[in-house]
Image (tube, rainbow, N blue to C red; front, side, top):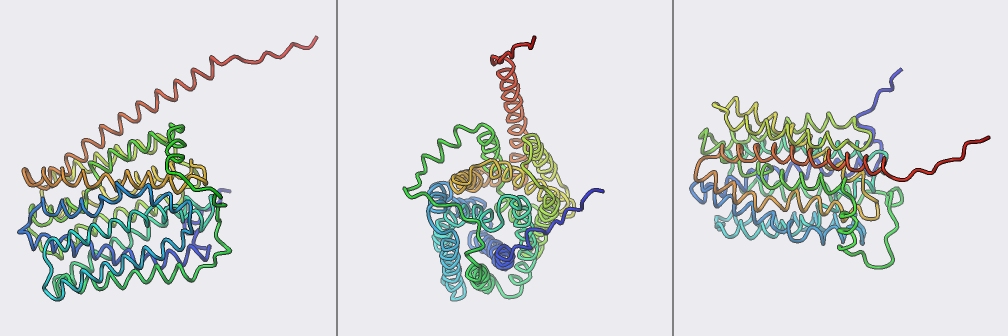
Length: 420
């Protein structure tokens, strides 16, 4: 009889359960903040796509420049302490911006400055959080815990924007930012309630961990560099939904904040379904699953760009959300489960740098396309480039596998003497 796989098995680990509970509150607040910040930028700039693109770029630029340093810190120091400090800092930044909004003193450069500062904090928080998941649950439960992390992230992504849209319509953006500032305490409390003795900690090296050692390790692993190359293409050209969704709502369908929240919720609902589907994964996914997931994402993005009505756009964004998380989870699991735990913080910092850090360049280009054409152009561009990149990486991977098979066949074989 086939054994039933419990999709929530990693929640049996107390430390992970505390972390997930706190993150659910914190991430919901973060997504409320995303909606409020984007809406505020568009209000202050008369719906400028370029202004929104610049704010997005400033928020993610530190990830491009500093996440490798964040990964080094994660491999060298206590991840639980780093995450506590990072969440407290993020909460203080959100509160500072909220005060400016509530006192009617906010101008565009304030939002840009706070976005940049938050990006610096995230450059440390993101690779540390990704590496900390395996420390909480161990390698056997890592695929399930990673998928559940995506699930609670997208539960929050469903609830946060929908609630934010209603709150913005009723009270404005300031109160939403206050809620986000308070929500960071959920993660901080969860982290401090953990039992450190139950963490699966890897012995930290006595000598300093170097970024270059992690890069050399990656360079020696083609099975890691190929999915990272695909992540780079998708992150640069496709993962700009923070920019394309508000522009689609406001400039194509001419909706209000509540309707924008519904579009974001449709995207997040598809992401949530995808995350739940991947909770059953028990091992490292194949290379073909990663490239196939990317190609599917590109296809549904391109089709969504042609959606003629608000309702069909919502359906398309549901499918796009499913494809985005399916690809991101497959790439994450293939890279993380294939990495030596000693280098995992630095490897995941490279993954984060590529996935998140490429967004500033992509958001500037997508903002330019959207302003010269319309918001649909961002979806077309991202979808077509993603399909081309997936096909290219698949072809390179197939050639690499064929070369390895050929080298194995050509290797000299030891001939055993035939017994007389």
